[in-house]
Length: 391
Length: 129
Image (cartoon, rainbow over all chains, first blue to last red; front, side, top):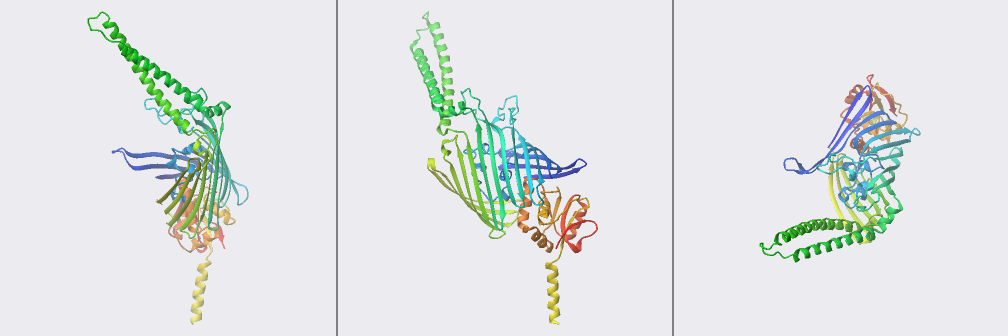
């Protein structure tokens, strides 16, 4: 649900905007679904060249980021790879795009009578992997616990429907799970660099984007992932083996202490020894359990761990308006992640879709999507159909 | 007699097809429109921070959208995007009389009507010929 309201006063014009997302048959009483404040911001409109946006919002990064959730105005049901939330557990969106920001200065400056340059500079919290999640902590849940923030921006040119821009961000990526047990700094410096181009020409509409994610890491970080098995897994297996042996020895000692009859003078002493051993065994069992969980985690990390950090994404999309209401399109997107061995040599997504818009506010969509990951012999076809309505 | 009748029909059609349309603004609106591109920029709210009004239908629509080089549906899609991302709303009106009334009473607003409808309550910004 979107809400918007303009205010006008002696200090100028303000626009306010709220976007509330309600999912999965939300019901407070039955504890179904979820409600989420996606955006809530106010913009001070001083002039065309200077506007200030404050609150919670999707920052201007490339062309598609701001509209990725506005289903009535995009042709897709399944979006280009790094913009698709339903696969965000495999391809985390925030690795490629800034999801939210809190302050943005933006504007349009005329270059010629017909060509306008646009700019946006934004500042936001660090990624949500840094947010507090403890229920009983002194910091409220959902608060950014770091001092480093995300900064970024976009500069572009616009001539009617032709838009071109270059975007960038700088922030940190929380890799504490990967570096668990290591002394290396897990807060990796991350740069996202993007470019976008979109235009309509006659009945054709075209859009393309690329995003390159570059990590500024030390050689120790590079060596760490290359030697992850040797340094982390083998060491942890060693610790696990030693602890398991200790537990066996304690069990043997415990079992070797035979209690005499209660009238025996050593009875109390031996019983105390057994109790002490039992308590030590329980402690070791707990430690062993924790270590096993850790081992599972690091083994999972290793399972798909690549040998570099950088990532790449791009997509192209071409549509043709056969009539005002009817538009077929083709789309291709490519994703590559050096840190995930499955996607080191890339993942491709091909799409063909049809958009039928009987009236502007209603859009019927159908889409075929094929995803390929050659490295792991993965190939899947998906068929989507849906309707987007704006009212 | 028959020839005069056809001539009259032809003249009526000709008049309606080529009816001039004027881009109008509130008296507080301080902008200059010189060509289709600048009209497009103001009506897509890329410039001027204006309130935009448009007509749901009518002959003035055909003339106006043909001048800015976009069809009605394309413009509605652009306005929909602005509404969903920037909170900027272009307001649809039912008639030219309502357009005159709204533009006259809304600060920093623009719209368009047939040239013959323009009155002294609004500012005439550009006439599409």
